[in-house]
Length: 387
Image (cartoon, rainbow, N blue to C red; front, side):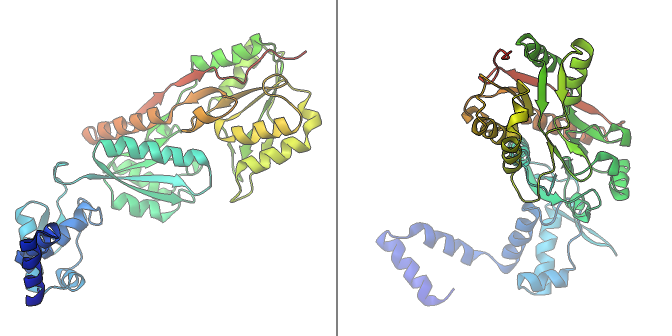
């Protein structure tokens, strides 16, 4: 530090101003280049740029990056070796220690989500962040186009565990994903889909009694003609997994009920909110809508569906009941308050953490499946069917 700056800082301290800044700068001045280089390397480790088990760049390269001499860098690395953050392997390089306590270094979770736009993806990320951050994990998120996306492999290399959303059809897992699962080096958890057939750990919703109760309630209200609103992608229909159970319940218990699953399956244009397509199609088919008394749809489509019904001259719930599936953080602010069979994303995140921890302790155990339950919320969108 230049002499004039030191004099100015001393003057500030004497005058009682800028004491915090002065103290910090003086402390930094007292640190040696080795200490500063050590802190910079440790910062890269704690930020997750050098995760557990990863190899550091060559020391001469790191010295150039940090702006210190090779010998200074060697001493800084040596200090971190003594502190058990790093380990040197003769002929192989310097590695971040694999067994650093979580009190000294946060574990890193890689989260894989699909690239298509859907509001529930943000909710999924939010709940995963909340649960794992509270458990002292550092989170990294990537958006993948499909299971062949090599960014997933890079993320796996740089993290202690992976949590995967439904990026693509689980039956289209790539060869390298299957290899990672079978190697069992790190926990890999698939969410919202059963991947046990591929020996992978899974957390997903299990259709349960609340779904049957919701279907029975619709029947008791007199609904015999029901429309299903759904989204279709290029490869698959995307809908709440309980819908098959819902359909099968009616077929078995009340076969006279018609559930139309074909008329309102929409392919959403890329980069467009699903609400726009749903709204347009409902308006265009307003005459057909009057032949039905109830609509079932994902909660994430609720605004588009209700707006389309209301602007078609159909009142909710007086003319058309609406039953929604799913979980959204802002659902309590929807009006009218929807009747929801809610699959709580917070429960999914907690189960994912439980499964990651279990897999860490049981690396060689067979694939495990954890199921989470739904919650019935009565809301204000169900009424007696009009004859």
